[in-house]
Length: 334
Image (cartoon, rainbow, N blue to C red):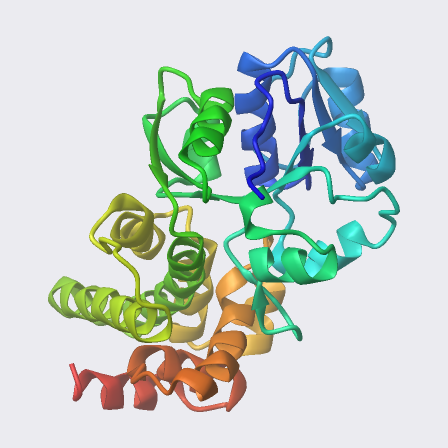
Protein backbone atom coordinates (compact mmCIF):
# COMPACT_ATOMS: atom_id res chain seq x y z
CA UNK A 1 0.00 0.00 0.00
CA UNK A 2 1.32 3.44 -0.93
CA UNK A 3 1.97 6.07 1.73
CA UNK A 4 1.07 9.58 0.59
CA UNK A 5 2.23 12.60 2.60
CA UNK A 6 -0.40 15.30 3.06
CA UNK A 7 0.49 18.79 1.83
CA UNK A 8 -0.12 20.24 5.30
CA UNK A 9 2.03 17.64 7.08
CA UNK A 10 4.00 19.13 9.95
CA UNK A 11 7.71 18.41 10.35
CA UNK A 12 9.84 17.49 13.33
CA UNK A 13 13.61 17.20 13.72
CA UNK A 14 15.31 14.68 16.03
CA UNK A 15 18.83 15.73 17.06
CA UNK A 16 20.61 18.93 18.08
CA UNK A 17 23.96 18.89 16.23
CA UNK A 18 25.07 20.98 13.28
CA UNK A 19 23.10 19.09 10.63
CA UNK A 20 19.93 18.92 12.74
CA UNK A 21 20.23 22.66 13.38
CA UNK A 22 20.77 23.45 9.70
CA UNK A 23 17.74 21.35 8.69
CA UNK A 24 15.56 22.95 11.35
CA UNK A 25 16.68 26.33 10.00
CA UNK A 26 15.66 25.38 6.45
CA UNK A 27 12.27 24.12 7.58
CA UNK A 28 11.38 27.22 9.60
CA UNK A 29 11.80 29.39 6.50
CA UNK A 30 8.93 27.52 4.83
CA UNK A 31 6.84 26.04 7.64
CA UNK A 32 4.79 27.83 10.29
CA UNK A 33 5.25 25.06 12.89
CA UNK A 34 8.39 22.93 13.24
CA UNK A 35 8.86 20.66 16.24
CA UNK A 36 12.39 19.95 17.45
CA UNK A 37 13.51 17.27 19.93
CA UNK A 38 16.57 18.58 21.79
CA UNK A 39 17.77 16.43 24.68
CA UNK A 40 20.79 18.63 25.51
CA UNK A 41 19.74 21.13 28.23
CA UNK A 42 22.24 23.81 27.17
CA UNK A 43 21.13 23.69 23.54
CA UNK A 44 17.46 23.59 24.50
CA UNK A 45 17.80 26.67 26.70
CA UNK A 46 19.78 28.52 24.03
CA UNK A 47 17.15 27.89 21.37
CA UNK A 48 14.26 28.73 23.68
CA UNK A 49 15.76 31.97 25.03
CA UNK A 50 18.04 33.29 22.26
CA UNK A 51 16.70 31.52 19.17
CA UNK A 52 20.14 30.02 18.51
CA UNK A 53 22.00 26.76 19.11
CA UNK A 54 24.93 27.81 21.36
CA UNK A 55 27.02 24.73 20.49
CA UNK A 56 26.58 24.19 16.75
CA UNK A 57 26.21 26.51 13.73
CA UNK A 58 25.09 29.33 16.01
CA UNK A 59 24.69 31.70 13.06
CA UNK A 60 21.31 30.07 12.38
CA UNK A 61 18.68 32.29 14.00
CA UNK A 62 15.24 30.83 14.67
CA UNK A 63 11.88 32.51 14.64
CA UNK A 64 10.54 31.51 18.07
CA UNK A 65 7.02 31.75 16.73
CA UNK A 66 7.73 28.94 14.25
CA UNK A 67 10.08 26.59 16.10
CA UNK A 68 8.84 24.42 18.99
CA UNK A 69 11.85 22.96 20.85
CA UNK A 70 11.18 20.28 23.45
CA UNK A 71 13.02 17.67 25.49
CA UNK A 72 9.99 15.37 25.25
CA UNK A 73 10.33 13.19 22.17
CA UNK A 74 6.79 11.92 22.50
CA UNK A 75 5.38 15.46 22.39
CA UNK A 76 7.46 16.18 19.30
CA UNK A 77 6.38 13.02 17.47
CA UNK A 78 2.73 13.41 18.51
CA UNK A 79 2.54 16.87 16.94
CA UNK A 80 4.19 15.95 13.63
CA UNK A 81 3.59 13.80 10.55
CA UNK A 82 7.09 13.94 9.03
CA UNK A 83 9.92 13.00 11.41
CA UNK A 84 13.43 13.90 10.24
CA UNK A 85 16.14 11.93 12.04
CA UNK A 86 19.36 13.96 12.27
CA UNK A 87 21.12 12.54 15.33
CA UNK A 88 24.48 10.72 14.98
CA UNK A 89 23.88 7.10 14.05
CA UNK A 90 25.98 5.95 17.02
CA UNK A 91 23.45 7.54 19.39
CA UNK A 92 20.20 7.14 17.48
CA UNK A 93 18.99 4.27 19.66
CA UNK A 94 19.65 6.42 22.75
CA UNK A 95 17.69 9.32 21.23
CA UNK A 96 14.74 7.05 20.46
CA UNK A 97 14.84 5.04 23.70
CA UNK A 98 12.18 7.20 25.48
CA UNK A 99 9.83 7.02 22.48
CA UNK A 100 6.47 5.40 23.21
CA UNK A 101 4.40 7.14 20.52
CA UNK A 102 3.89 4.85 17.49
CA UNK A 103 5.62 5.67 14.21
CA UNK A 104 3.39 3.49 12.05
CA UNK A 105 1.36 6.44 10.78
CA UNK A 106 4.35 8.78 10.33
CA UNK A 107 6.71 9.43 7.43
CA UNK A 108 10.30 9.03 8.61
CA UNK A 109 13.20 10.77 6.88
CA UNK A 110 16.81 9.91 7.68
CA UNK A 111 19.33 12.72 7.28
CA UNK A 112 21.91 10.52 9.01
CA UNK A 113 24.93 9.48 6.97
CA UNK A 114 25.93 6.56 9.10
CA UNK A 115 25.19 3.02 10.16
CA UNK A 116 23.81 1.62 13.43
CA UNK A 117 26.77 0.19 15.39
CA UNK A 118 26.23 -3.37 16.57
CA UNK A 119 23.15 -3.80 14.39
CA UNK A 120 25.03 -3.82 11.05
CA UNK A 121 22.10 -2.01 9.46
CA UNK A 122 21.61 1.35 7.80
CA UNK A 123 19.32 3.80 9.56
CA UNK A 124 16.50 3.06 7.11
CA UNK A 125 16.88 -0.69 7.61
CA UNK A 126 16.95 -0.32 11.39
CA UNK A 127 13.88 1.94 11.51
CA UNK A 128 11.96 -0.39 9.21
CA UNK A 129 12.64 -3.44 11.37
CA UNK A 130 12.49 -1.81 14.81
CA UNK A 131 9.27 0.15 14.25
CA UNK A 132 7.49 -2.12 11.74
CA UNK A 133 7.60 0.42 8.94
CA UNK A 134 7.55 0.06 5.16
CA UNK A 135 10.23 1.56 2.94
CA UNK A 136 7.30 3.41 1.32
CA UNK A 137 7.11 5.59 4.43
CA UNK A 138 10.86 6.11 4.78
CA UNK A 139 12.92 8.74 2.97
CA UNK A 140 16.54 9.85 2.84
CA UNK A 141 18.12 13.31 2.65
CA UNK A 142 21.46 13.02 0.88
CA UNK A 143 24.13 15.47 -0.22
CA UNK A 144 26.46 16.76 -1.29
CA UNK A 145 26.22 19.27 1.52
CA UNK A 146 27.84 20.33 4.76
CA UNK A 147 25.77 21.86 7.53
CA UNK A 148 28.23 24.72 7.91
CA UNK A 149 27.68 25.91 4.34
CA UNK A 150 23.93 25.31 4.36
CA UNK A 151 23.62 27.37 7.54
CA UNK A 152 25.62 30.23 5.98
CA UNK A 153 23.30 30.33 2.96
CA UNK A 154 26.00 29.19 0.52
CA UNK A 155 24.74 27.45 -2.60
CA UNK A 156 24.15 23.85 -1.57
CA UNK A 157 22.66 20.70 -3.05
CA UNK A 158 20.38 18.14 -1.43
CA UNK A 159 19.03 14.89 -2.79
CA UNK A 160 15.67 13.72 -1.43
CA UNK A 161 15.07 9.99 -1.81
CA UNK A 162 11.68 8.27 -1.51
CA UNK A 163 10.00 5.38 -3.28
CA UNK A 164 7.33 7.93 -4.34
CA UNK A 165 8.41 10.90 -6.44
CA UNK A 166 5.45 12.91 -5.11
CA UNK A 167 6.54 12.38 -1.51
CA UNK A 168 10.14 13.27 -2.35
CA UNK A 169 9.10 16.53 -4.02
CA UNK A 170 6.81 17.50 -1.14
CA UNK A 171 9.67 17.05 1.33
CA UNK A 172 11.95 18.96 -1.04
CA UNK A 173 9.53 21.90 -1.09
CA UNK A 174 9.76 22.12 2.69
CA UNK A 175 13.57 22.39 2.52
CA UNK A 176 14.01 24.53 -0.57
CA UNK A 177 15.13 28.15 -0.72
CA UNK A 178 17.20 30.34 -3.05
CA UNK A 179 20.48 28.78 -1.86
CA UNK A 180 19.38 25.13 -1.81
CA UNK A 181 19.05 23.13 -5.03
CA UNK A 182 17.10 19.88 -4.94
CA UNK A 183 17.35 16.65 -6.88
CA UNK A 184 15.29 13.50 -6.39
CA UNK A 185 15.82 9.76 -6.44
CA UNK A 186 14.09 6.50 -5.53
CA UNK A 187 17.37 4.64 -4.80
CA UNK A 188 17.08 4.39 -1.01
CA UNK A 189 19.64 1.57 -0.79
CA UNK A 190 22.23 3.17 -3.06
CA UNK A 191 22.10 6.73 -1.72
CA UNK A 192 22.19 5.61 1.90
CA UNK A 193 25.07 3.19 1.43
CA UNK A 194 26.98 5.74 -0.68
CA UNK A 195 26.66 8.23 2.19
CA UNK A 196 28.05 5.61 4.57
CA UNK A 197 30.93 4.54 2.34
CA UNK A 198 32.09 8.09 1.55
CA UNK A 199 32.81 8.64 5.25
CA UNK A 200 35.16 5.64 5.26
CA UNK A 201 36.89 6.94 2.14
CA UNK A 202 37.29 10.42 3.63
CA UNK A 203 39.21 8.84 6.52
CA UNK A 204 41.52 7.19 3.96
CA UNK A 205 42.08 10.54 2.23
CA UNK A 206 42.78 12.24 5.54
CA UNK A 207 45.33 9.56 6.38
CA UNK A 208 47.05 10.09 3.03
CA UNK A 209 47.27 13.85 3.59
CA UNK A 210 48.59 13.38 7.12
CA UNK A 211 51.22 10.96 5.84
CA UNK A 212 52.47 13.49 3.30
CA UNK A 213 51.00 12.13 0.07
CA UNK A 214 50.37 14.80 -2.54
CA UNK A 215 47.54 15.88 -4.80
CA UNK A 216 48.51 13.49 -7.59
CA UNK A 217 48.06 10.49 -5.31
CA UNK A 218 44.87 11.90 -3.79
CA UNK A 219 43.32 12.21 -7.26
CA UNK A 220 44.01 8.53 -7.93
CA UNK A 221 42.91 7.49 -4.44
CA UNK A 222 39.57 9.29 -4.67
CA UNK A 223 38.98 7.98 -8.20
CA UNK A 224 39.49 4.47 -6.88
CA UNK A 225 37.19 5.22 -3.94
CA UNK A 226 34.47 6.12 -6.46
CA UNK A 227 35.09 2.86 -8.33
CA UNK A 228 35.02 0.84 -5.11
CA UNK A 229 31.76 2.49 -4.02
CA UNK A 230 30.17 1.76 -7.39
CA UNK A 231 31.38 -1.83 -7.28
CA UNK A 232 29.91 -2.39 -3.82
CA UNK A 233 26.54 -0.89 -4.77
CA UNK A 234 26.26 -2.80 -8.03
CA UNK A 235 27.35 -6.15 -6.62
CA UNK A 236 25.32 -5.92 -3.40
CA UNK A 237 22.12 -4.36 -4.81
CA UNK A 238 22.01 -3.93 -8.60
CA UNK A 239 19.80 -1.08 -9.77
CA UNK A 240 19.54 1.50 -12.53
CA UNK A 241 21.58 4.20 -10.80
CA UNK A 242 24.12 6.76 -11.97
CA UNK A 243 26.87 6.82 -9.38
CA UNK A 244 28.34 9.91 -11.05
CA UNK A 245 25.31 11.85 -9.76
CA UNK A 246 25.72 14.34 -6.88
CA UNK A 247 24.25 12.04 -4.21
CA UNK A 248 27.03 9.52 -4.91
CA UNK A 249 30.16 11.07 -6.44
CA UNK A 250 29.39 14.62 -5.31
CA UNK A 251 28.95 13.60 -1.68
CA UNK A 252 32.15 11.56 -1.87
CA UNK A 253 34.15 14.49 -3.23
CA UNK A 254 32.94 17.08 -0.73
CA UNK A 255 33.59 14.73 2.20
CA UNK A 256 37.10 13.89 0.98
CA UNK A 257 38.15 17.48 0.22
CA UNK A 258 36.22 19.78 2.56
CA UNK A 259 37.73 21.52 5.57
CA UNK A 260 34.44 20.79 7.35
CA UNK A 261 34.78 17.01 6.93
CA UNK A 262 35.11 15.43 10.37
CA UNK A 263 35.96 12.04 8.81
CA UNK A 264 38.81 13.56 6.81
CA UNK A 265 40.02 15.21 10.01
CA UNK A 266 40.00 11.89 11.86
CA UNK A 267 42.17 10.36 9.14
CA UNK A 268 44.42 13.43 9.12
CA UNK A 269 45.11 13.10 12.84
CA UNK A 270 45.93 9.41 12.48
CA UNK A 271 48.16 10.07 9.49
CA UNK A 272 50.06 12.67 11.50
CA UNK A 273 50.85 10.11 14.17
CA UNK A 274 47.96 10.16 16.64
CA UNK A 275 46.72 6.85 17.91
CA UNK A 276 43.17 6.00 16.92
CA UNK A 277 42.02 6.47 20.51
CA UNK A 278 43.66 9.88 20.92
CA UNK A 279 42.39 11.02 17.50
CA UNK A 280 38.83 10.08 18.47
CA UNK A 281 39.23 11.90 21.79
CA UNK A 282 40.39 15.03 19.99
CA UNK A 283 37.32 15.08 17.74
CA UNK A 284 34.61 17.51 18.87
CA UNK A 285 31.94 15.86 16.69
CA UNK A 286 31.18 12.28 15.68
CA UNK A 287 33.13 10.87 12.74
CA UNK A 288 30.56 8.44 11.33
CA UNK A 289 33.21 6.68 9.24
CA UNK A 290 34.80 5.16 12.35
CA UNK A 291 31.71 3.06 13.07
CA UNK A 292 30.97 2.54 9.37
CA UNK A 293 34.36 0.90 8.74
CA UNK A 294 33.53 -1.94 11.14
CA UNK A 295 29.94 -2.31 9.96
CA UNK A 296 30.76 -2.35 6.24
CA UNK A 297 33.47 -4.93 6.90
CA UNK A 298 30.87 -7.13 8.61
CA UNK A 299 28.22 -6.58 5.92
CA UNK A 300 30.71 -7.34 3.16
CA UNK A 301 31.39 -10.80 4.58
CA UNK A 302 28.13 -11.73 2.84
CA UNK A 303 28.69 -9.87 -0.43
CA UNK A 304 32.47 -10.53 -0.76
CA UNK A 305 33.07 -7.39 -2.84
CA UNK A 306 36.74 -6.50 -3.43
CA UNK A 307 37.17 -3.37 -1.25
CA UNK A 308 40.90 -2.76 -0.59
CA UNK A 309 40.44 0.88 0.48
CA UNK A 310 37.71 0.15 3.01
CA UNK A 311 39.76 -2.83 4.22
CA UNK A 312 42.80 -0.59 4.73
CA UNK A 313 40.78 1.85 6.85
CA UNK A 314 39.36 -1.00 8.92
CA UNK A 315 42.84 -2.46 9.52
CA UNK A 316 44.16 0.88 10.81
CA UNK A 317 41.12 1.70 12.96
CA UNK A 318 40.40 -1.72 14.43
CA UNK A 319 43.34 -4.09 13.81
CA UNK A 320 46.05 -1.65 14.99
CA UNK A 321 47.82 -1.77 11.63
CA UNK A 322 50.30 1.10 11.12
CA UNK A 323 48.78 3.72 8.81
CA UNK A 324 52.03 4.31 6.91
CA UNK A 325 52.54 0.64 6.12
CA UNK A 326 48.94 0.01 5.09
CA UNK A 327 48.82 3.12 2.91
CA UNK A 328 52.03 2.05 1.18
CA UNK A 329 50.57 -1.40 0.55
CA UNK A 330 47.37 0.16 -0.79
CA UNK A 331 49.28 2.52 -3.09
CA UNK A 332 50.89 -0.49 -4.75
CA UNK A 333 47.41 -1.70 -5.74
CA UNK A 334 46.09 1.57 -7.16
